[in-house]
Length: 505
Image (tube, rainbow, N blue to C red):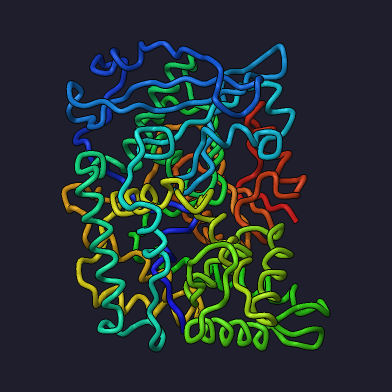
């Protein structure tokens, strides 16, 4: 079985953490120290991209909230002004990652946010610290990232430490590159600091309390914010929730259950079709999954052709392409087409391009920096084991839940074994005691953030309440369920709180 190192560096989810890396309680503008930052003026102007209706600006925050006189970093922000004449304020947004661009997400507001909400709110997105346009963290260049994502373990279920030597070396080299290129920034990438940056932005846009929509890892930003600034919560929608109580490696193992559920849903749909490359009508889901497993093993032994560039489409890169199907049903046809070309013609081009889409590889010369940001945030937000043997054991456990993807998820967390210990937060539950009601949205067959995580977060947050979408794909809002969409919109606009545990069929 081909096991790539990429598992934990492509998931559109976050990791955990209760503490910050700046030391002490979060300072506020009311207490004085942050006045210099919260009194900045956002000089809104034209954007380089995104159309004439949006406006862009930058603001500064301290790299280290424990040293307000030290180095500063810039945060890039984009705004789509409210379409109506009676705005309620700003809706801050984050699409997940870690490493996802809230700045770019504003350009997709027409698809991701209802017209009613856009009528009443300025939609404001920002690139979190170290991401995209916000003093980006860079560790590896494009060629090195290609090599990093293409690393495989090829023996057994992925629990052989000796066979993991290449993954160990690659993980160590990644962290060393971060130390070389950004030794200070890599130590201040945690979500607790991102939440503080967001509170500065809340003040700069003139809102007394925060209205926020966070998806996937973005739920962790929102939960951290509510825990640090409960009195400043107006309405938070946390969609596709992360469970803050888990450590990074444990989350990687538990994610295997979500990916296995999503994989089987994809295969179940595929085998009803006469053109399914995993077997047509009459093929069972187990048989279809076995056919996919056999194909990936074959790609490990004999890599596929690639007409896009000179990258070898081995088992690890083929897996990345298949994983694209597990995030949203809208990608299922494209993944089926790519699998057909790979299985029937030996052409892996479609699969490698799907993997590029997941990783923000816009062309052959560069990636977005989402891979570096994702690893840095994951490794900063909670403790991880320091012994390789523990990752091997986790890979074996994850393989029992998801034989194809589980070991990859566990081994993908290995860079955190080498992350500077002083940069790692303590982690733990987030309660947001004293905050107004907070909406948590969970999807029953979510791949990247299992439904159990939404249940856990809603339970941990003292003011949390759960809305359930029964469906496939990652996240719930604007995913085709009118019931969920109506509940989210009513909560954001009117602060309407449905019965806890409200499910939408």
